[in-house]
Image (tube, rainbow, N blue to C red; front, side, top):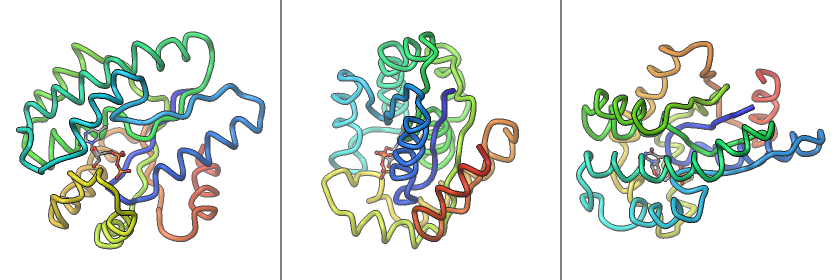
Length: 198
Ligand code: TYD
């Protein structure tokens, strides 16, 4: 199984990806817990270019190319070999993040994002969980966490609100693959909702 977690900044998907990977491991599966941008040594190097620095450091178009380059390396080095070996992959973000962040929220680049995906990536998760919550609450969580990886969080609440709308629209367009999960409450409560759907 190839499973991705998606959502706005601070929605708790990193915690949920980890909890699900741990639960699958405890059931005796071989599971790779990974993340984007990143997940392979080369892609982690590209990650630093993307998540640090000023909001206007890259144009939306350049950003698309960098995310796609990182994803291509991640797919080549980790995801494709793992799936070919019959192992499971749980990733904190994948191509839906590019569709929503670069394709819809930062700029209207949906056609470019789709073309790059078809040309360079081509794989989709078997299941995607969109963790949904109020953007103001999520932003407060994300900002409280601190750290230097705040380039997208620095784009503000209206941006996070557009992101939420983008994820919900994507889920509505792909009901078989994408499930929206209520991300409010304790981590254990959210994890139980995810397990029930899976
Ligand atoms: P992430 O590490 O998941 O941050 P967080 O834990 O705060 O959600 O992702 C880093 C940032 O990169 C995040 O703000 C979302 C953004 N991003 C895109 O804009 N496009 C993409 O394709 C991906 C994978 C991430």
